[in-house]
Image 1 (cartoon, rainbow, N blue to C red):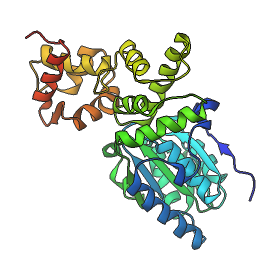
Image 2: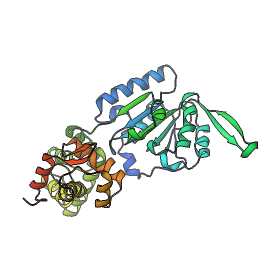
Image 3: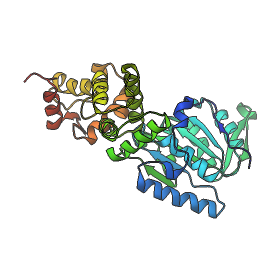
Length: 335
């Protein structure tokens, strides 16, 4: 087995070394998502015992929950290479064929934002996923001919925040669909403490739990808030991050007790004031907020829906009573 490497074609997912260093490398180091982990561990062990490539996997759920981390863990647990790219990175069929033809047996091809693949790239994936073959057209016009390339058996791992945008034929070719859900605060607290230890930062349990509660159930946000709290702590000369420092830091960052930030409040206030509580379509919200539709649907709305602050109906978005109450408690609406 050659030394494991991370290949990115045609575009690398950018990450700094610090972010990579605090990511778990093994499945038993991954905090939370317990049912998913148990099932994934079973599938990995079975494939290893049978000396078979792992069935194709699709991780889906809101951003920041660990889809990329899990893909790297699968590669580590199976002791194979992982090749990382993203859906929008493929501009032509030849890009994908080149990548597929360079895979070794059991290798993992990880495609982030797989719902953004073009139809022609999807069609190229179908025979590769099922029969481990690629059809490639040589030449053009009447002289064009199709050449079929055999490729090694590999595992495609896709990641998406929008499972519903995957075409049915592509979705059905994933033998292992795994959903990631928002994390419990107790799990986020463990993650925060582990990351703090890795960064050689002292944080007490109460402070870690306060950060966890305000992290929208998302590890990526927990780590980001921890790093910003560290900044405030360092500048203030504190050697230990305590509850007081966390509260002051989050107040400066305008993160409220539920973990809502300025964008969330702006979104909810827009529905309340501009559209009388709804229903309102996402296109109108996008125009009113000057924000991309995908950002609203993928980043802003999932947590607000999960918390019962808004409702997404066939007629549009509606601000719930709980949502109105939250705005009134913050004095964002006139009584």
